[in-house]
Image (cartoon, rainbow, N blue to C red; front, side, top):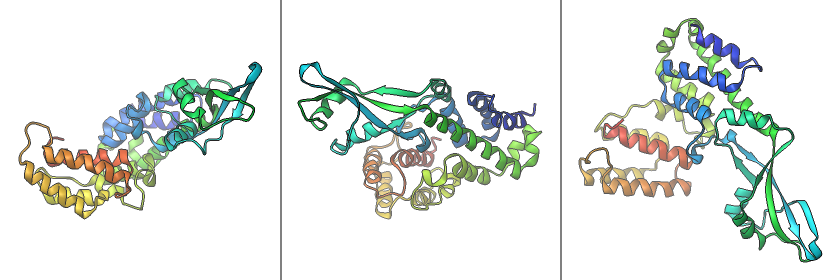
Length: 303
């Protein structure tokens, strides 16, 4: 079967839903053998279990409307809420919606007419009440985010366009991939890894500061080879002092029992989460910790 050719045809056909395209893309992902591409296709098809790993294109900026109740049972509805006085954690909640669900769910939401509503939980309304008020004795009693369905359609279009661009670049490297399943296995792993980074994950959307993400994606860490581990993490953007601490932690822990990091390595990984949050690395928290853990497991020969 020319499943790649069928996939390309279906991607550009607006009558074919994106869920169907992603199911076909799973066949391609299995043939290519690139874990990052497989992870992306699976996450889009079944949803993102970890919200911190959700790609930027699935995050929308929205506005919030509220209802205020006042004396003599007066009610004012659909007031645009000012959020600049809210605590930072509430401000982010009030202005952002993250869609972690599967593509099929997003397609169903797009079938709704007009705008979608996401109510604030009562507890959040109570927390915001002291910071958002109206004159005349009116208090906030309800709030909800307003999500235009065309913005959700934009998410689906982004996914479809990424998939199409990926297929076109595969065809450019190996034209026979459209008619031969075996051709997928012949694509150089380095080129494939670079394509996944730049096309699917968007390059700078994952790694800030110009770090060449493809360098550390394709680099192999040999079991027990400290130098390959250090070089890998350098490409990730880990500063030299942190690398030195890791080497000392590995030496101190010795050979781990089973597939469990030693106590000092565990402590080091926990500290690195704070380093990422402080901006000491050139990556976001979700990406940084994922690749740090993967690299450490590779060093011990666990993956």
